[in-house]
Image 1 (cartoon, rainbow, N blue to C red):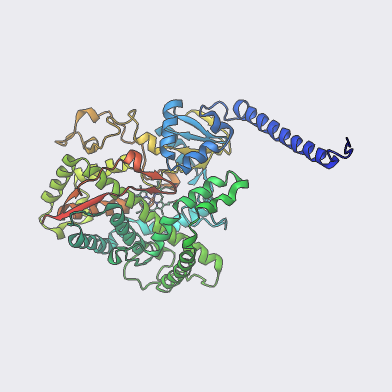
Image 2: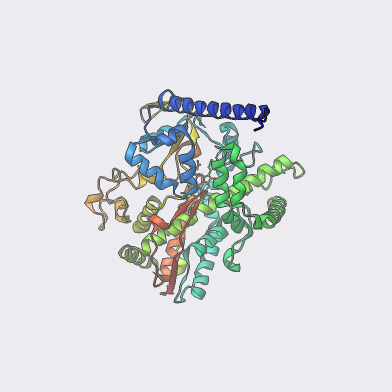
Amino acid sequence: MAFDLNWPPLHSILDLGLLSTALIATATYAIARSIYLLNFHPLSRFPGPKIAAVSNVWYAYHWLSGRWPWAVEACLKSYGDIVRIAPNELVFASPKAFTDIYTSHDKGLETFHKTDIHDFARDRDGGLIWEQDPVKHRKVAKQMAPAFSAKATRSKDPTLHKYVNLFVEKMKEVGEKAGGVSLPTWIQWLAMDIAADMAYHHEVNCMGNEKDSAYLGVTLSFNKFVTMTQVLRRFPALSFLRFVVFPVSLMGKLMELRKTSLAELHRRITLQGATEHLDYFGQLVPADGYVPDTDNPKEILHLSKIATQLMFAGYLPPSDWYYGAFFHLLHNREYLDILTQEIRESFASYDEITPNAAASLPYLNACLKESLRLFNTSAVINGMPVYSPGAVVHGHYIPKGTTCQFSSFSVSRSSRYFCDAHQYRPQRWLAAEHGLFEARFANDDLDAFSPFSQGPRICVGKEIAWWQARLVMAKILWTFNVQVAPGQIVNLETDLKAWGYWVKPELRVRFLTAQ
Ligand code: HEM
């Protein structure tokens, strides 16, 4: 028998040796890192799932499943008000923590800086909402502030009426059908038509065309991709995977949209001082003021970011709010009936309904507040992550650089702050002297959650959002008896999904003309 003296080949032995050395080294590193993260890392004293302390797998899994808010809520129930949800990240769930984090400032500049969660373009310009640098943010925020004054808000009344009236007209045409109309679709069209026109005079006409505008279509399709990109930032070696959920078929539409939005922006800039009504963008190109340099790509990028952000900030949370309000009222008919009666008794005719007059209806205000509580908007579902500057939060020192987020979702559904926390109960928001107030809600901590945030980054559109929401609800409920189309069972607890923003379950609704 002949033996091959060259077998096994020397290079194979060397390769195997190298491979096993690499494997052993990786395993040793992973074990040592886990021991460090669990026992010696500055956040090791905070409780939470072990897997979340040693890797971002927990974070990734729950974000990608679309159930992040529920996963965080379950953790907070198990571990307490501060939970470690990733190696260098904590989530908080107490009103005190909210104040400590979001109102903390030094001469008006926030001390907890925003993270890069929204910085997808990496072009060093966060516009207004995504701007991470507090100094740059304050400059733009100051410039924009007058656009949201009470006077500026009132000047937008005709535009607001125009779109709400169009919604009412459309529902008279299509809302009576036995099968009803899609509530999420029509609500988002209404909210988008209002928001785009108010942001920068952009008439996207979703309701008129009965279809998503190009912006809306592309945005809705990129929801999962955005979350995938956010998650994969934590796994750089796997970043290619985001293309698994990239809507390739929309590439053409995306390019087209880029072109048309640029054209829209240039159109708006040239309208300087000649717009039909005041829009938010007017602050950046005032009638008798600064003329932007349209040949400067940096300036165009900055203006286009702000225009788009104003449009989406004005569209997304309101569309969640109106959907949530209708959803809960439709599933709690007794409250819908009380609200409808309050509205109809307050206005003898449709034309009497104004945002100003609607502001004084206590039951309407109560229903809208309860809707925000039970259906947190997309503005807060990502936990509004910020970096600790090295500060005390909820009595604990949080080391510099720790990512801190807040679970509004858990706090607003917690029985520690609200009686019947999971139930839609508008009466909790009524004054004690109102005939429908119930004493069992007297101990509710109504300030426990801040749907519009607080501090230097508070929602600048808060007043206009209220202004719009009251008119939308009052005009619709004055005109229509609203009911769920037969044969539908929708459970928000299981059917709602959260990625970059909520994906709301379909609900077919009938709008029956009452007067
Ligand atoms: C349901 C209604 C609304 C809710 C619940 C809401 C909520 C919020 C929240 C929580 C923030 C802070 C986000 C963060 O710091 O990450 C915010 C910021 C903002 N919101 Fe709203 N919003 C609403 C409607 C509006 C409307 C109608 C506008 C009009 C354009 C608007 C414009 C803005 C702007 C410009 C910011 C950024 C402020 C800044 O960073 O200085 N919002 N909003």
